[in-house]
Length: 459
Image (tube, rainbow, N blue to C red):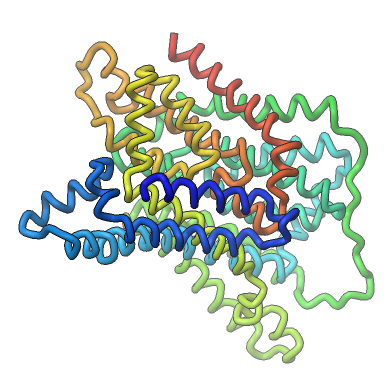
């Protein structure tokens, strides 16, 4: 059953990758493997947990010494593990829903038109550099998921051709992941390391910003020689009615961007999960919209009120997240990821090779449990520690390089990061297309940034 869980995951992953040839929506495949992994787990739970690979099961037995047998196993899986993981997944889903709704509200009020009107170039190379650098620094301030959602909305206003927009959206994913890696609030994994005490704000910026920049610039530099031509802007129908005034566009752009920027501030001051700050921001924007549009004709209300906008939010993307994260959670709970982390440590026993491997694996498996596994394997050592374990002190090379690799390695595959999954869902990017067109560029950028970190700190 332990191996069957892996087989189910691989088959489901293959179905997701072959979404277009199979003509089956990836959200359906993700929901099936998300459920089946837990079904196989609970049916074979006794044999799986007796293998001794699940640290959460060991922790459960320690805290519940009087419980044993099949009833204890079922209680562990149903009442503890599923509840725990669905809580973590729910945080991501509510965050995603809030961010997507805020972006849609700004878009419906033509707030992004203010930005797109200022970007006048149609040269593909120039536009790619402008958007990539905008994404890189926005991702550090917001996070890679929110930034990707915002930039994909912008791309729809700037680029008409679907294939060209896929290319730009993919580069946005690369830039968003690179930008999130050097900021303590830019990616879920850096947030985990920051809260856990493995890294501090100034040192992670100082140590990882240059490798992250190289990770983004190398693919851009290559594309500067291969990409030609101009982008075609979407046609604007002059007969379309304008439902918003210039002041309303500015207001909702400021409210939207301000609401997104408020989320990391909210988390810092309250220590509550980021999704609560996102929902609070959405609530404020919702109220403002209700007040502004309450006396307007029904036609305008049906287009601009949040209740109407919510119907346009991409629910299949949210369900895809739910399915794939549920499947990974089952593998984490059963001990597959812990076994993988132990294997890497035993056979590599080199912090740079271990982190590089975790980064590559994060393009296949969600980087959150991989980083969580690494945090669980290695305690933070004392500042005076010498030898191999000296790399595990606070702000040590292992933790800094882990922030880089786990943050940027997910770009190698479209499904390897929250930003990639969001772009894939919003723009319906084909997995195989990304693999052919982008994966090699992402890998070159990833290895280049890693090489820069090793040159500056590893030697």
